[in-house]
Length: 102
Image 1 (tube, rainbow, N blue to C red):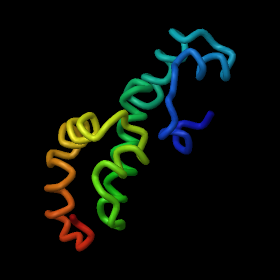
Image 2: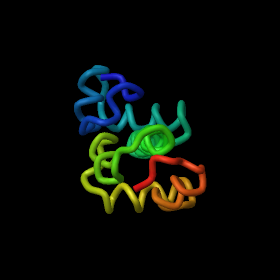
Image 3: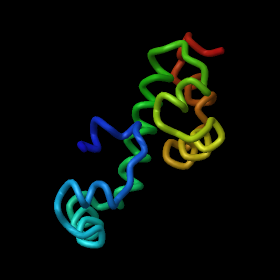
Image 4: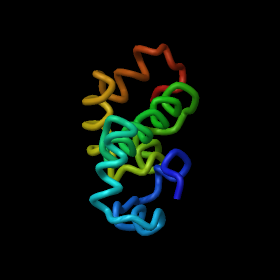
């Protein structure tokens, strides 16, 4: 599994470790050293970046974007997006001047 391509799928540390033939604790520590964040943080950042691009370039609803990005629901998506970007998804869409807003 390549996290940069498969970030929208459910990811389990144990499955990643098994695929790399290492212990999950070893993978966690090595990933943190290499990327400066946990596997979970990396995946959330990838999902938010994907969603940001969708907000800028599509007419998809926030709910559709949340599901397409791999979030469990729109609420989780909105909270995570705001925490990482500083704006809610709808405010971001408005601030970027996107004409695809609802």
